[in-house]
Amino acid sequence: MDYLLYHANSSVTGRELVRQLGISGGAESPDRRPQRLIRWGNRSEIRFNAVGGVLNGKRALTDASNKGRSLELLTAAGINVPPSAARFDGELLVGRTETHVGGSGFFLITSQRDFELAQGHLHCTHFMKYIPTQREYRVHVFQGRVIGAGEKLMSEDATSLHIRNVGTGWTFRYNNDGAAQRVPQDVRDIAIEAMQALGLDFGAADVLKSVNDNFYVLEVNTAPGLVQPTEGDRRREVDQGPVFQFYLDAFRNWLETAR
Image (cartoon, rainbow, N blue to C red; front, side, top):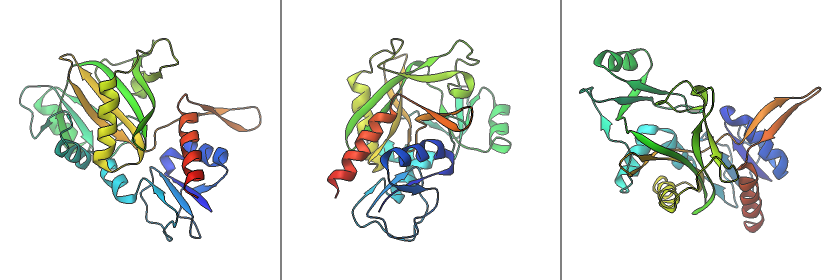
């Protein structure tokens, strides 16, 4: 038995991967020993260790999901990340919660009062210097190679220039979309390095290009949303994102060669 262990927050994509891979899966530990295990963002303890291999071990997922810890590991590996800040000193900051999902948990800090509110009411645990942004990319890496890469672009109904997530109207467009600029090789290389620094077999690295042409890794996602739920007449369906097939092919190949 092969098993894909997904997190409740990534269950839409997780369930669709399970269905199309034709393997067992769920948000809970398997009830018997799996041959191979794929952890799609779920770092929970499991009752039985896989005997034929694991993609994304528990420790690596724990480090990657803790944004403070992941930034420490990336810095130690010589990878640029936005400088951290212990207090507000007049420069714009970005406050972040310890963990977050779907691009949430980012707050622009413009004053000492903002800083205090972010700590006390928004549960921000660490702060970074705001980096004036030229472009932002997402690079999907699987076992040391790039399987998909795209650029974050503003939609017509965007509501913010500085906090860029789905909630404020920013989404990633991939190379099959004419609006997306081809992702530079430097960005692809730093994404691969980030994955190695965190000990991950696969994931999606968010990389920022500053107005000074420097690159910074913002975070690495271990369960990126690849499909969106849609309501049909009688059943719930999913609309597959452009990178879904790349992960599907990569997982199928790994499951086959790991036998």
